[in-house]
Length: 581
Image (cartoon, helix red, strand yellow):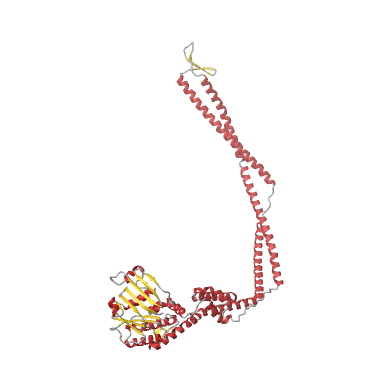
């Protein structure tokens, strides 16, 4: 990728830049804080990469202080990519390898990735494929079982870890299946050539012996059925005997009440007979008293008289006569109530006598009947016998099962051996797949294929720059001279980042790199790195390299592959351009 021109207006610390890049390598230099890093940020933003602010609503802050509008136009490969601030209106020409731009525009970006992202980037960069079909082919090449590979294939879409974990689960299940047959904990050496051993036994499991025990079991079962039926009949008889005795006792108690019931009936009848005439007499007197109400004077002697029935009685006046009538009526009422009570009582007494007489008659009939006798001792003996038969039959049933189990064991010994061998083979097959999918298996093989061209390029670049040998290990650890990246100094990290960015630029085909803060290097070291860029530019491997750094003055004498741009007071370019601005 070749950048032909850079036009920047009011972007961060850079108020104006209008550069024509006529050489592969451009040195952007000036004092601290004049806008050199703003040039790097402007290129990235025009190409669609991130800015120093997180949200687009804050893009107004990217415009140079005191200005309302900013613009960036980058001419490259016969086209242009631009953006206007603060609206963010952009027009971008397509760039092959766009996904690698962040790592050549900001070299420190690669080291900041996590291991998974680094690994993914390098595999994409070197076109090292981890597609399921590629992995399937590699598994088959390692001798994996084709059917099991197809079974695990769908999980490869979720990554090596998921597929490996499933293979591990299948391995565990196969071990469990082997143990279920053998009764022993699985061991790879033990399982190899394992044969199912049938334990020795004196138990006769011939068909004739099994049939004989079954016949005994059937006979005893018949006796048990007969015994249970007899016991059921005896239970019914016991209920009948118990009912007969209870009925007899009830009738005897009822019949025993007959003398008392007769005596009470007769006494009640006697009392009723005494009260009945009393009531009739009182009723007659009451009628006569009511009929003779009122009196008259005797013509002979002048005494007041009244007629009561067929008699004449002295009439003492209406008050006395009324009181006597009322008393008589009360006596009639009392006598009537007594008669009614004795009549009701007599009715009940007659019913009691009838019930007792009926009980006597029923008892006489019951005496003529004879209840079957229930033999408790015989009953208990039968229950005990049935229990003994059941225990005996349970033993025979257990013997039949044991005989059939052993017979099956003898018949299936070969099958058990074959099944165990099959499960053992499953364990071996799944173990092979599990190990092949482990990080040091196929993933490591694919990663090694991805790392090889990367590390080869790093080795070559380090040789060109005179820098300590760099390497990216399978665990994504970056080292320089054997020292881990986090332990390096600031300038050493800068060199590592620059070499990685150049490697990405070369392998991706971008042929572009932007290196900021080159002043972190000592002049002698910086010269070696610029020499490396010169070699790459001469060979055409790098089309555009922009190196930014703080210098006291603009370099005067430079090789033909280099152009120097001085930045001062937010202006970049030739003096006449700055003056025009």
